[in-house]
Image (cartoon, rainbow, N blue to C red; front, side):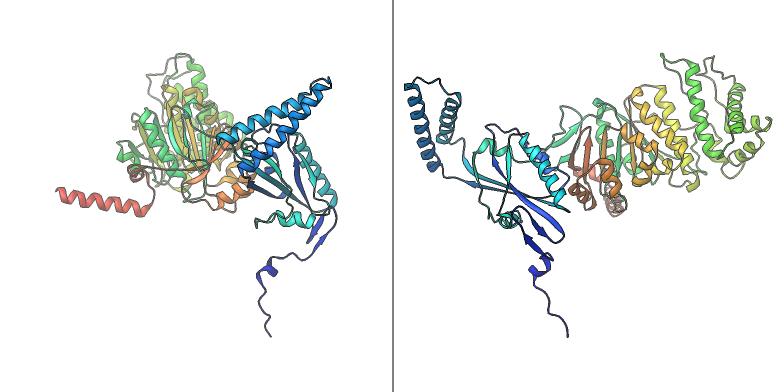
Amino acid sequence: MNEQPKKLDELFAPSAFSVSPNYFQIGDKYARTIFLATYPRYLQTNWFSPIINLDRVLDISVFILPKNTATVLKQLRDQLARLESQAMEEASRGKVRDPMLETGIQDIETLRDKLQQGTDKFFELGVYITIYENSLKELDETENKIKGLLEYQLVFPKPAIFRMSEGFNSTLPINDDHLNVHTSLNTEPLSSLFPFVSFDLTSDSGILYGINTHNNSLVLFDRFQLENYNSVVFGKSGGGKSYTVKLEILRSLIFGTQVLIIDPENEYKYLSDTIGGSSIKISVNSDQHINPFDLPIPKPDESPADVFKSHILDLTGLLRLILGELTPEEAAILDEALIQTYAIKDITPELDFSKLAPPLLSDLQNIMEGLTGAESMAIRLKKYTQGTFAGFLNKPTNVSLDNRIVVFSIREMEEELRPIAMYLILNFMWVTIRRTLKQRILVVDEAWWLMKYELGANFLSNIAKRARKYYAGLITISQDIPDFLASPQGKTILSNSSIQVLMKQSPSSIEVVKQTFNLTDAEKYYLLEARVGFGLFFLGQNHIGIRVVASYAEDQIITSDPRQILEIEKAKEEWAKLRG
């Protein structure tokens, strides 16, 4: 025989409920309700936030009941008469004046004036807190902690002794006050109770990043006025990461910022083509090439020797990525081979090399073939100089960064070569950045490709630390957050990024995100369920909810939605037919 379906209240009811004078048990939890009994003369703004943000399980109810102004005025008049009578009686007896009595008279007169002018109102306030713990000992400890936080503000709570059942019912989300323990407060101190303190991220200059979802203010500022100019953007695929960054790129161009982009999935080409930027395709079969041996030109405050040594270190990182594991002996031979390779082109640390043609990868291979102990490395390089990948690294540079936006597409690059290609492009950008001082933004999308390898992660983190010196900001975008933050280099990039943006997160990564960014449970669930274009925006110690908003024209340029792109292309074709 089938059981009858249970009533709704039976489904929600706890397995057991017992009440004692100063606590109650609900299931296997111990609970206690306390109420706020007395308040000080002045209350600081946001004084209740430490309780709201306490890392404990609490139910909090706040009951606010407006009082009739005429009734309050009559009560104040009667109270004022009593206080003035008391003051006169004490004066007639020759007693020293009582400051507390005089202060009370002044407060009542001020409050009466505000009520009569309609600039203030009176309310009855009841605040109840139910604490839940696993044991009586933990319950007492949490109650003492809450009391300490409140009494520090001169707010004194009391337990609802012999009224625990009424206290529990009063903190249920049913808007029913069973305790009826109220204090009379006027508008100003009452407003200080509300914990909704939101930050404005608005300055006098900069670009619009979006709308503050807490208070609908504008998130507007200039990243180049921050402590450093870097940012990170994390989120699952389809959450709006690239859309958010493309919108910033588009708006940054208005202020003359040059933007250099590594684009693994061809998401930025349409944006670049629309506004007259350069799109460079790097692949094995491409006729566009970057020579990793290109040297930066020393600035006036830099010595050629320092620039040369720094470049050798960066180039060594790329070559070790190409060659794989090296023994200590091979690493030393590689360093010597690089110096000899530049020397055959008359490039040495002591001389001005700004006008000399750099060597190629094949020159390094030739040098290695003549060095004892370098035979294995020479064989491994052969694939990149004469073999399958010869068209990739062994050509003189024939691309330029002389445009306001330059996009390097590596979508057609084989997966095993993507980290090498990203390192190569990033090094080429870095050489250019060090060559001429200019306000720039570097965008590395799908940075996890590079972060998978220690050498690539080291290079990217070094740029994050040094970019500010060259007036550049690094934007690092990734969806693989746990792996990104698992490495010391990932944490370095994060700590050197003034701006941190979290878009929609996947369940598999949300706990890492919560712990890293110290999110509340509400923020955690917000990121799990965030709509496209919504997220959390961190700037220094502050963070807010953000909604990324683009105009219609901007949206047409930066969209990554394939359906929308096809519709735009179709509209263009139809317009061309009408004109033709």
